[in-house]
Length: 120
Image (tube, rainbow, N blue to C red; front, side, top):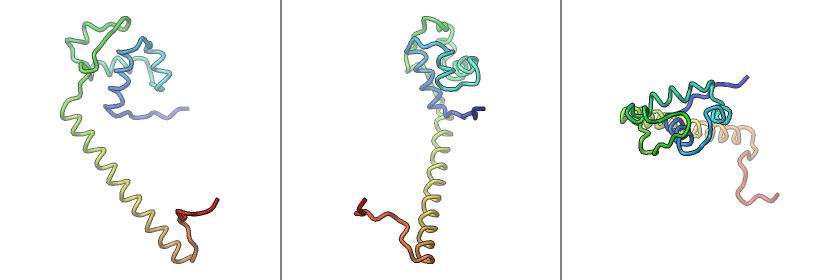
């Protein structure tokens, strides 16, 4: 069983861009990106594509300029904030791992980190 991956708004826009700029079908995109159903594309179109443009787009023979795909400023701000928090969490994780290695080297008396000029 596949796990469901939550995509960022940016990733969704990239998938929609690929769908609009190529002749790839919705079913092919569903397989390629492991979408839960083909209706996922329709949902994303309703969420991200301007309604005026959406009416002129048909599932076959579509052409859409990437500039017509949009994210609201609010969703961009939310995505930016989420990424900042994730970056800070990873910085703290990295620092914790380094401290843990330092303690292990001190207590065990062995070098754990790889030396930069080590022979192989």
